[in-house]
Image 1: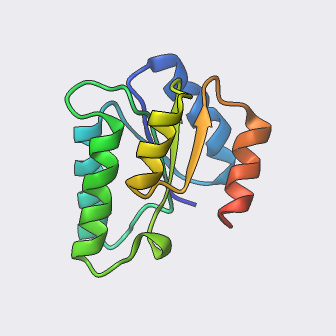
Image 2: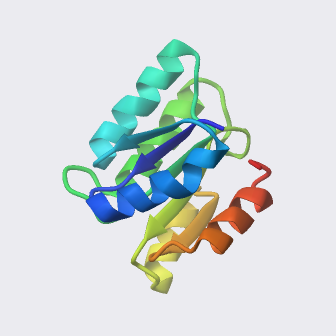
Length: 130
């Protein structure tokens, strides 16, 4: 499984890297703008990500904006979101508005920080990634 962790907080980024490295290759981006560039680069190389873990509150481009752009990139390549990358929002925001907005923009999962290994693993299984 090839994963992109998008997280501006150093500690949260390290935690997710550690939790995911046993499942395969893990790349990182520190904001939504970098995430979109990484996804575009992966598409160009023909090596799409299987999973993107995407924080919501980030500088330059937030997670909601990045999610919408990533789904647009997939759509432009003829991929519908249900068949594309799995995107899990990993965020401290657990209010109904944030969760609803993420699912409206076609995320596949939503985990509230601090990320729990058991919940993350369950989400990966539910998404048929492991």
